[in-house]
Image (cartoon, rainbow, N blue to C red; front, top):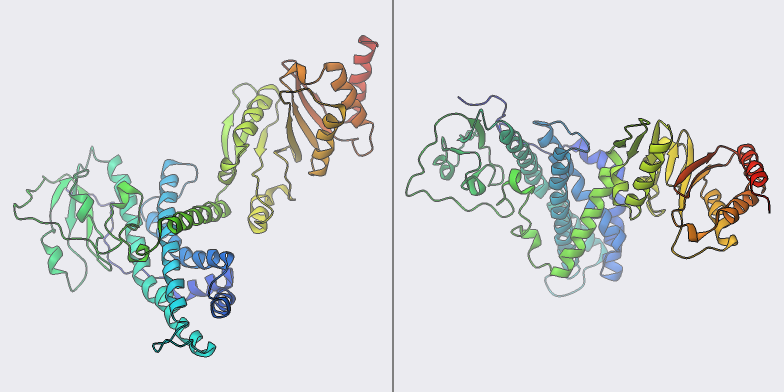
Amino acid sequence: MDSSNFNHNDASYFYSESDHIQLNKKLGVDDLFADAINSLFAQGRIKQSTQVRMMQELYEPLKQAVEEGWGKVNAIEYNTPNYEFLKQLKTNTAVFAAFKNHSRMKDMAALLIDDNGNKRSKPDFIAEALKANNKYKVQHLSVEYDAAVKQARSAAQYKKALETKHLFPNIKYMPSTSANKRELHIKYYGLTLPIEHKLWDTILPIKVWGCKCWWTVTDDAVTKIPESFEALPPADGLGVHAGKTGQVFDLNESSYAQGISSKTKARLKNDAVKMVNETEAMDAPYFDIHTDKKTRTKIEAHPYGINDSDFDTNLDKAKKLAKSFELERITLIPNVPNEKPELKKVLQAKFGKETTCDYYIKGKFYDLKEDGQDSITDKAFKEKFSKTKQQGGDGIVLYISNPSYISEERMYRNINSKYLDSGYENFECYLFYNKKWQHFGNKKEWIRFYESYKSQNPD
């Protein structure tokens, strides 16, 4: 018996004209292409920032294809193993797009010189460059989009097949739904083998551009592999088992990757990974990563922020804060570079303003300031408060675990000095010192505490 959970490759998938129009609006593709053409003609090269945007132009349709294919089988749920695997598929297509864009630029640069070895006129160059661009942007994309949908769907199916293999332990290769079937694939029809059989690495659909063969899971008996059986070589770029490898395209065998130096490949891969992280961050929600058992205070973060260099430190101190105070929720604010204004705008929209502080608690911003190994001067200590204010902070989380950093008396004296400055009337302070936490909600609370402290500890 076959499972009914798996769909046929009964259609060809494509990036529609309306999708192209939306992408053009989103990225300003017409202006982008004009910048590239003008730079190539005038200087023989394209600016790095323009190259990255051109790469994104080729990635966005493939990203949509992967999401379309995956979504036919599994829901897209953030902060789950399935989501991480989906992101792996997207990263593969992003690198593919980076190699594709590099090939496109190389082809366009070659068009600066005509068949007679002379530099083309600008109108002639633009006309030829448009033809080359159309080849990559429209003709190639038509089959690549279809393949990406089917590969992502196959990957999602495989993940689900592993979960249900106690019911359906085998995979059966099913006939193409195309009216004109490939003779070379007919010998695969009906082949039934265990889900993790190594032969599926080389023949599991799809392995040819435009292929409509498909597969399903089944509890039918395993079939015998004919002695003369020989797996056909896959098309360039499709020699991967998407469900096992997390790859949509075989980057090593893709024609786009040929002739690219190792150094350039490494740079392009790095650009692609950054692009995926940023585009994913645009769509990803904040998610809970910790709930304190005692106070029930929740800590939430954003996937983009997990890559911050100070993320582990901020999370550790947030956990300590949550353990001592009932704060309902602590949000770790992702650190977004100023040169990424659109990303910062999206990720910090929930806060009502942009900030470089570390925490968002009950509608207020707080920055974490810690101690160091050496003792600190009065001026440097007070600057921790000043800098927090400059960052737009409503309060400070001051964590001092090293008593030799500053004495209790000197620390309190300096905090008092800052509270006496103008602008600190409603400034909050969460203070950890001498293995205990204290909280001062505003200037009045601090003055009340400090007067009591001074009366008990006279000079």
